[in-house]
Length: 342
Image (cartoon, rainbow, N blue to C red; front, side, top):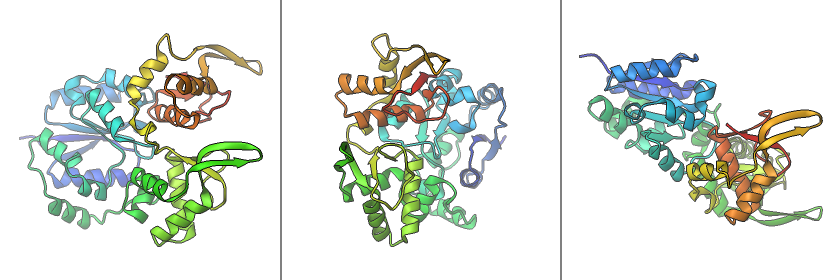
């Protein structure tokens, strides 16, 4: 009987190593997808011919058009999607309602990372799915731990999520929620302007350092990793995370983490949604775009969201490839920058 294939499109070496260790421990064959325009067509043909195969696809590793999660969903038949796990390694925040949305589209699962410690903490996710698809026996946590230990798998400090796991043994989302439970997130004023619901970089650094018994340097690295993932940001998007009294906000608000991105995207692109039209700036024309501040206005009025939470939601849509800055230079800001639906 032919050994089932598990197709991989993963951008980080540490993620590939962890995935390959799991796949080979289960007696399966890891097969990397070649990044080329016809990669998805090739994947569909192979998985249709191999009903016991599976795939782990990171959106960043796919051809440009397929990084739009709705385009990808349209290109894959349902019988294939239900054997596909999507990954967003180092590509932004991921909350339970995001996983729900991806599963509603027909995919098997959405994961933030492929990491040995994450798989041991939640073997019901990836290990169980591979066993289900391929008909192989599921491995116990003890068996998995033995294989991972033999491979000397450790979180990758070169990636934001890997660095967080290495120093805290937590997911980035869990770390953000813990941080926000221990630092003051309040309205603050600087130069006569008030910034809502923000915390201080030096206070966050102090808590991270004390709680995880690390140096201030490591604490700043943790804060910077959260910033790179979009889980925290400087209120004016002007500073990296620093051990200074700069103002930062978190994406871990009770409102924002419970918004269904798929339904929100449909509303924004409907005739009652954002005003999309050709615009110009300094003599350059930009076709069919909308203004960041106007999108924040729309969410503030229609959804009763604070402006900073509206900005966070738009950036979550951006991280899933659904919107983009016209020059691909900026996150969504509550300013007069131009953006497009992809």
